[in-house]
Image 1 (cartoon, one colour):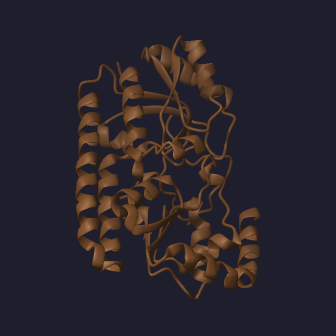
Image 2 (cartoon, rainbow, N blue to C red):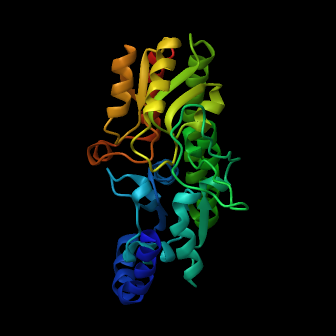
Image 3 (cartoon, rainbow, N blue to C red):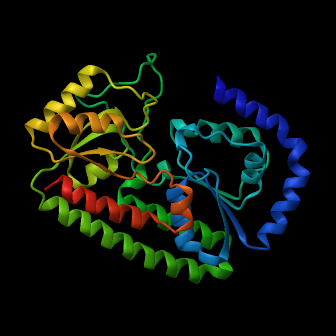
Length: 316
């Protein structure tokens, strides 16, 4: 209800802000194609393809937890007036559908990441503390929306973004095409590194004392996993049974690393690691980055390279 109320209030306020916001946006764009992305991965993919030829915005502020994002009235106006709008799709982006259905004017092109690649249902594996909610019969299935965690998927998504840019701005088509091809090679190199690591790993099991937004990554490289929560869980306190299960699995399989994800306090992972004689490392899901990292120019590839290093230690 909180989410729905915020959206309705935003829609009501949109008309009063429209005139001023539109003028500001026109000044900022300076004739460049205006692209808005909800979170960091599509923002970085678009940045790699578009370079200086585009006016690019990420709605999620650096350091903000992506699942808690609520659009402001200005965000709603800017989405409506942009050339290309890129969002994730899935349950956490219900607000996007509400906005798009409520506005007569739409972005010229819209890309949902979950429509770019094959998706899988979000899974609750053995030991997980499941969401404390009941689903009625006939209710729509929930699909895992973290499709970008697979570099292979990132390549596909990047090519789709590039094609949209070329269609919207044919004058710079050759630039977008060349940039996308160059970036696809970099992503392929990243994919090869992960593939080599996992194919030769001593163990193929990951332990997460946290949410698990790496389903597509795990499937791509044949890795198993146990975790405290599913990828989009709103729960923060795992059951005693979950903690006990993860401790025993870490001990039994002699796993040297328990993972946490970005913006997590790491307390659950640390509890498991301390009890099992392991250490805690981070595996970054790339949802978002903090302000310092953004200012330093961190990228999807640099985050995944750091993941590669930490995963090497975990699978040894």
